Length: 236
Image (cartoon, rainbow, N blue to C red; front, side):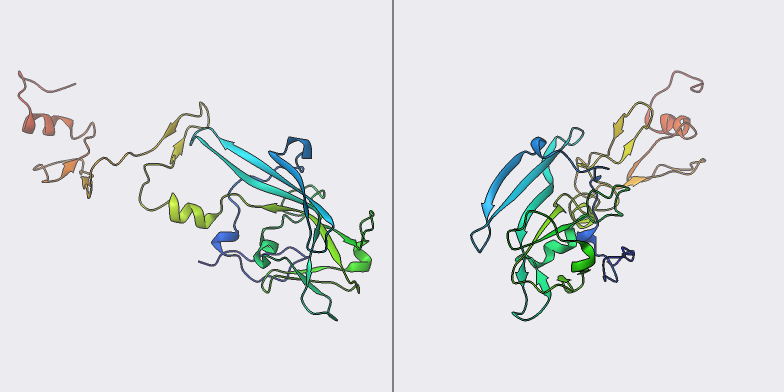
């Protein structure tokens, strides 16, 4: 399934696939690093250190707790060709999960780039990055032997997860389908038997179907007369 076009002015990606459509809400502002579930330093391939922070999301209604955001600080990128200006992540498709400015109204999600061991990020005018989400490359204008990035990466649920694991039509017994916006009450359908058929009746019945039928107010008297023993009269 292909969906909407990505119109971020820093990307050159023509279409978005379900696995790259985020379904967890991205905070309007980046989360404080001290609130991370995991906050630690790891080693880049060249021996320098980078920081990685995992942030969890708790879903009370489904009793789930899972990581949905990662912050990478001073993460070493891999140069595609020795004399080139094209860079990639070791896990190339990670670039498709970067949170770019424009996905919220905040500009604080802007990816930052560093050269060598400089503590100050490079100016965007000098690096002029283009995120090619189709070929999973970051093309830059700057010559550099090493290049590091600091960015936020989404690792939560996506549309592909929901389609494959939760939203299998027509109903699902694990995923909440309806919620009252006023009192937050939740509802879902629980399937207790295999290959069950339920009939939606017309307003005027002439006979009962062989399969189970959902009873409405308009059909109650007919069904009660057919399957029950009444002591006279109709239900009012």
